[in-house]
Length: 279
Image: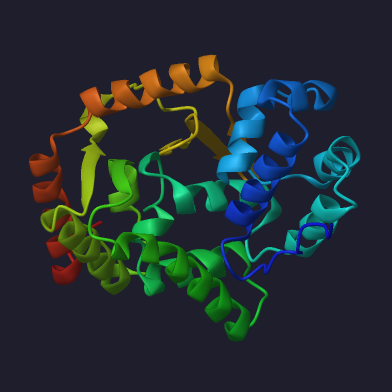
């Protein structure tokens, strides 16, 4: 009998790889926990691989091929999928984001990538990479705008953003770019496509002062959280950690302005940028 067919990386590769993993595991008569044991991972981790919410790493693929007698199938496909348009530290998070049903995001200094405008994204990339040419900047912006197409769906994922007021006040790209970006964010909020809250300066100390936080929920897999720093990030599935970070986000929501008051503030700051009165 012929083995599994190598996957087409252009068509939901992680979902296809996960489906093949489930099929191969069940054919061997193993539970998720039994497959996870020799890999030193939990059964829930295997479930996340099968659901396509986690990327299969090459080291696991090699061992899975040996355990499930799949003739190098998973190793071959992991190598084929290894090239990504995203930075290494963000690859898993971006792929999980694409299949999430709920995303909760707190950012202390930036407008989130999913709701940025091309002008805002370009200004950020130029500040990160001051020596690269315009063509590379344009490519990076295009990739970010492609990510933002998640919001083209009218209902899914549910995106709940808590922004620090600092993200509104820092003029990334200048006053015109900031006015356009805040108008764009406000429009998404008015269309009820996102839920947006602003954490004002007068809130003082708060639970998220340590950095950014992203929580993701899925239809058929446990939730994940993603914490990120400069050129580094970690996708976490430990249930206790996810619960702790969920509490952090809940505390941020409680300290933030209501969505309506947040919208008023965002549109007021946008108007200040348009009139040149925002300092």
